[in-house]
Image (cartoon, rainbow, N blue to C red; front, side):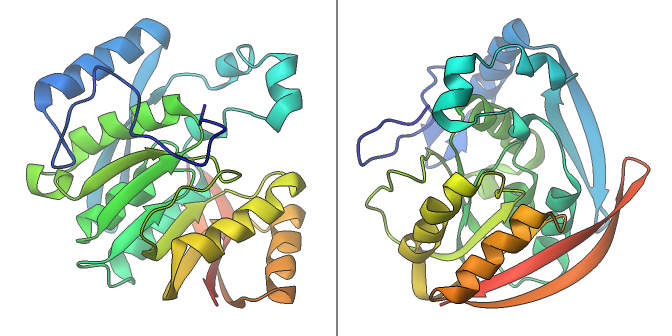
Length: 252
């Protein structure tokens, strides 16, 4: 969990070695071994834009619900959303690979979860910072970075444990991406502030979500504030189920 101070930190794991942002292979293997002692793991293959990704994840995310104490939920309504692969992530990754022009761009992924969208952005040539509130999510994302990206691409990667309520003082990004990051009304203000603070004045954000009421309410709130929004809706088929996904571009 992120510090309550006005800061953020690199992934707090001795099993992770950052050298120019990349994971040394033996350190990535050590990190995966550490996860295997705590979780039942599986690897899920997903093909997006003719690119195959192999994602390490937990076998059954429902098991993680048992680890959420009433106190933890009462504090921040924390649930293990990060542990599954969602339709919104599929669409965001596809956009990174097929439509966005990301070469040389500084990209921040909010709520990276398993890291699929950020990995796609790095594959497309971006310098990517993976961020999440949950350290376990960052650990899985780090393993997936090591499994799916070349050493050159890994040299453009950073990991940041980030609490939107306590934003760090860091250089703003060209692009912020996020899939399924709107779940609680209590996060509207913090997420809006994060988009305003962590984006360059000429940058933009792209968020994807499955047309939930709470998502529509959040984007309506942004529209009432200081942002300009445009929305594209696309059907996404994943795991034998089709879902309509809103891809929302957000600018100042």
